[in-house]
Length: 229
Ligand SMILES: [Zn+2]
Image (cartoon, rainbow, N blue to C red; front, side, top):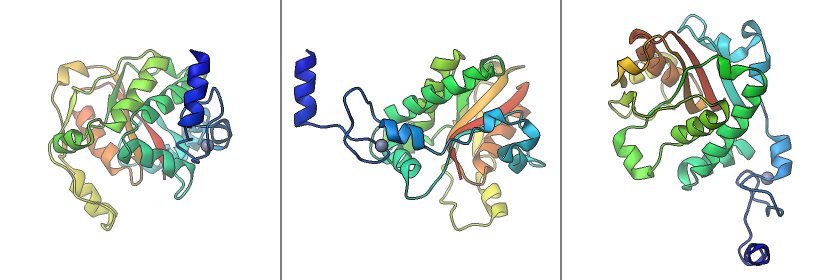
């Protein structure tokens, strides 16, 4: 069977989703060079007062732990990974990054800090079109290595926010306000929630979604993204 898969690899070589180089034998989805060179934030190793991501939420919403696996870099490995994850039908990337990040977080004892992982939901029409929610996949990967349950049934996205790139920060916040509601408040009572999304830019989406969780009785709120700009 091994000879057969080697032969297949010759005929149909697999490429790294971050740099497009051919994968070596034993590599899967992301090559070893990229794995070494990805821009890891390592925010999880910092005290909260020194964490630049925590500081960005300061005065807006109370966030217990603000985490991001990678720094978003345009036209590079991170953008390629996210593009493949979101638009090229490769949900497995989300799960892989979730597993990798989960094992990093586990080394620092983060599995003790959360009770439930919740992904930011997609609007139903978008979910149907894409076939999967990339944040669900990331949540699933994190859940597996941290051994913390996750659910995509707790939060609902009521409307699809319009494109946000050309609006002011205030307008953006207004735009996502009430986009989300908690459809199963009983599932979050007194729980320490880790809310996850693919990319953090202004933080307005996580803020709006997180406010709903806090108002519906969760004990504390933390956030984690694949990449933060
Ligand atoms: Zn690569």
